[in-house]
Image 1 (cartoon, rainbow, N blue to C red):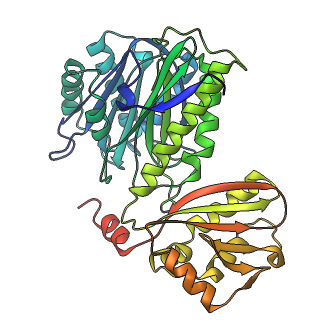
Image 2: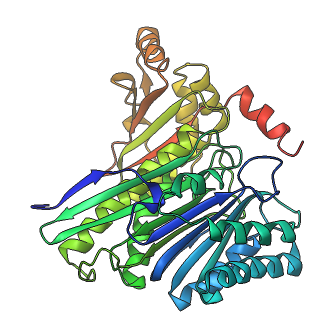
Image 3: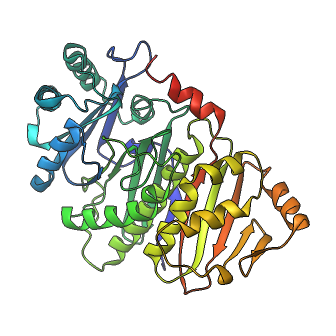
Length: 405
């Protein structure tokens, strides 16, 4: 991209100028941080993608209502309680969270977004939440990104944050973000929360388009267990504090932003997969030779979501018959006689026929690694798609069997 350079930097969501954050313990959880506040020092444009679930949580319903306003001042998010399936009272609680943050920060309530994650079906302890919002507002800091990222975690085992700096001849801007997700991970939206900030000036329509494209190739291409949640959301805001001119359609700066945003979302998405509940393997499923990208994605997800395939990954067993069975049940026309499968650099199927025990033993060796690639070539076209998935382990069952205890 000529004189444009993109570098990895520290700071997560507070890496961009004019962004402050805090994470506090308000009492939803027994001990861990459970409430996050992120604020922009000036009004920002905003974009979001939300769950496709027909059982959407109260914060999602509220966020969808606010998006047409197109302005962002702050985000308040809690963990430990999803505020989902809580009826009109839950909607009122989501609104109270927005009102409390707006009052604490002195900003319009329609510019405050709300997110929640955790157990479905329980009311929020609003007295504790409102006190936590006031405390978080008093602790907002440009160095608060990591605590904010920690306060949105549920069954996650580690913080997920990343940032990029884009250097142009006329100056620089930054893109930073944080995410949570470990279980109930499936596409459309991937079951997770992610929040992204940039100090570039990007109008809301362009920001929405860039975010939709970025999510489509990253968060919507990961799966841990094929389960979609009620609370999924990726939200991005752009406050213009970099001082660079506003990004315009087809401009080099918008192209650079789109690249950096996709790179950032890809890193956060892979962090979610790597931290999947009970995961011991992270697997990239590459589907090539498809007639369309949509068909490649559908086939890749069918493989990545198959319990039989995922348990074979855990067992380090290159049981290619399970992959063929998954391909055949995806609702996409395929020609078995054209299919080739490889694990890493080891071919195990050619022309729909297995290449024998020696090939499988070599593939099994590749599967001993914590990360590996399964490539499926359909021999039907030139389209392709990569899906990131995991194995399925006894630990996943134990974690989810005890989730509410």
